[in-house]
Image (cartoon, rainbow, N blue to C red):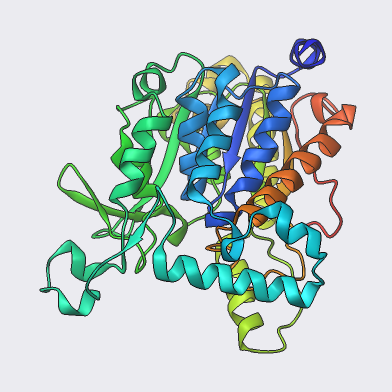
Length: 389
């Protein structure tokens, strides 16, 4: 822990933000990333999550820093099962090749589709088509009530809402309006239903009712929480302090041209849920340059011009701050197909977790990630994996 304390002491930024994308079973990668951050003392001040990222984010914000990794591990061990009835060590002894492992993964995913994931979701006894229209059972294949009980066991919502350590934001979509909404501990109390709403991906999961409105998974509109981190400061007028941001994505936007229908389904998910993180990052860099340029020009205006309506408007958007944005993007193995987001086997979970841990540690070994670049008012992006998105 001494090394971690030194890292935070060395940090040249006021805030550490952790942004967690949606991706179902791939979310164990995010838990591995957080374990690496915790080991080095980089506990986030603000966590923003969507879908499975919302569940991980709630556990982080809803527990004391020294308990978070253990709670994440307990959750992921509860909602995953031994692949085909065998534990990870037994399967590892077989030394399965890529093709055989792909078959194991597919069978494991099929078992989840039929039986659900413990402590997470379970299939409805009757097919939704047999339920009367207008009932919640008629709108989804699975019942997510087990998730509420699981969240109540692993998340201290009193601590979460106190913002004692960490601010929490969760993205969901209003079903009637189609608008992306963020539930934020800065403006409201968050309960299990807000976390469930963020991960209510149709038609598998039912919409969650909150204060008379129904919500679905935020990834339907945007699976990239980075957008909220930036736009929220403009909606509320808050000045975002200099921030070290870790953007943890579970889908990569780049991939090979598909050769069959299974690969088509995989690429469709990757393109849909990657939400063009890289393109939005480029937009933020340009927007930030505009903000800094406006601030510089306003400083050079004579006092009499600064009182004009136009100058006051420009002053409302002028900002000077620095972001270091570290991208951590899960890169799938060849044995993973279109079912990788609902393949909740213990072996795959452990592999995803280790991958996140090692990717984060590799990133943190670069000292420039923790240092401001240039004039200190820039957005600097880091992605040390090959094939940046």
